Image (cartoon, rainbow, N blue to C red; front, side, top):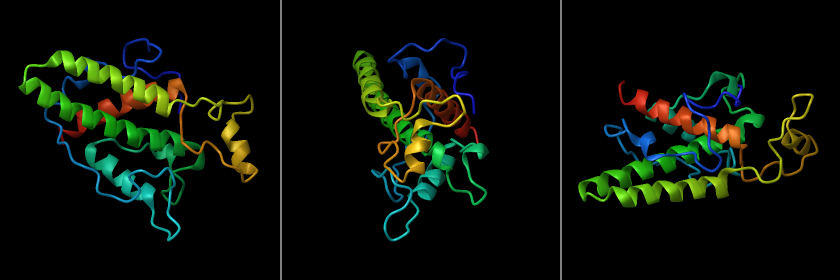
Length: 185
């Protein structure tokens, strides 16, 4: 998947992943809380073998955010090199749905200035919590990621499942499109 082509008709601006305009067209999206396993876990499974990724995939699919086939193994699990993107996608969906819920409350009260501030705060949150600070997602000349080499050595590889700027822009646009198209089904 080419994350360089990551926007829909506009040039990405550093630190700005969400804008108030992203929420136009989400008015009819059903805001459904996540009830699956591992809501705060970056792990794919727990020690008992409960599959956190499966619950998250089901939730995303139900919202209209389909997991690209190229992210999956033959068994239907998330490929190790795509887990950071997948986990970030799950977190982005949550951020967008929470922000849309807040937008609806603020719109009823006629307070859209506060909504703009909330969107700015979500951008700060995404920047500080989802962006790879340590180069784990760096693509090396052979096509491998730095995190692949940590994984190969059985060491912690991108434990917070952070992504590159390009990946995060791609994820936001992919999620917004999926949520808007999902409400039509």
